[in-house]
Amino acid sequence: MLYFMFNKPQGCVTARSDAVHKTVMDYFPADLAAKLHPVGRLDMDTCGLLILTDDGDLDFRIMQPSKHISKTYFFYAIGSLDEEKVKKLENGIEMAGMTAKKAVFTLIRNYRIRELADFMPPERREKYMKNPDGAAFAATLTVHEGKKHEVKRMLEAVGCRIFYLRRESIGGLSLDNDMKEGDFRPLTAEEYELLIGGIPPQTRE
Image (cartoon, rainbow, N blue to C red; front, side):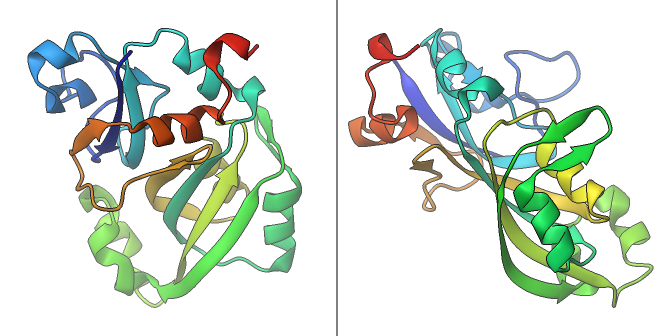
């Protein structure tokens, strides 16, 4: 079986093919891309850790919300959080159409919006910079379900808007900090064990 770690850039879609946009497969040699598929997905504007494999069962074993495999995301967001909002994020929060389960929130640093201009999507930068001294912050959030747009929607539910999002880890496997965006490499045996929790696939439900 083949297992690859990929540092997904922004601006490409998580798909094997797309008639309009560049895909994650375009970063791989054609002969290798023909064998692999992405495990789960990251939004077009989200970067970071993505696994690609020829193991047809891996997606089910680690990415289904019912498996409760942790996934940690780093992000920059506009807005501010108080103790009450943080408790909502950590204890579970009701949102339109879904309920987010408990999460782990870590504030890294508070900013002014103007300090983070370089990380903003060009099409939204002018709008955000109308209030350059407004509140912004960097943080991480660890979720255990991985529902569609979950992290973005959780922050929106407490009045904040994420404009840069990067997946840092899946289960015990962390993104290799030496990898630039667009880089890929095979997982080591140790990294594979971290990804699946050290339990052989044949013994997992």
